[in-house]
Length: 72
View 1 (cartoon, rainbow, N blue to C red):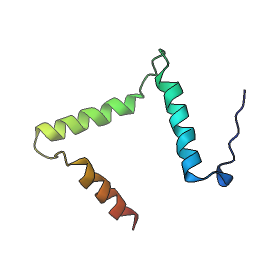
View 2: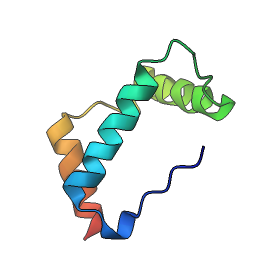
View 3: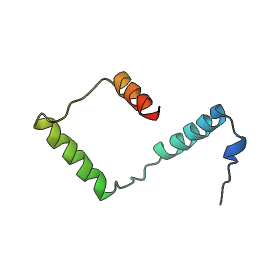
View 4: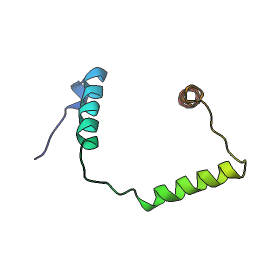
């Protein structure tokens, strides 16, 4: 079955609702999805940098602001 969404004609609200429905459907599944190998490598690298004091956590609001600033 192929589902086609005309994204160009959808509002942001409609797109977000579609994303929410997809997420609900995927997260309700008992089937486990394997993460790609590179994902574990990235997580291990980040954990290592935290332990070595080469990285730190920042508050979520600050992270969002930093990402917004990158777009401009």
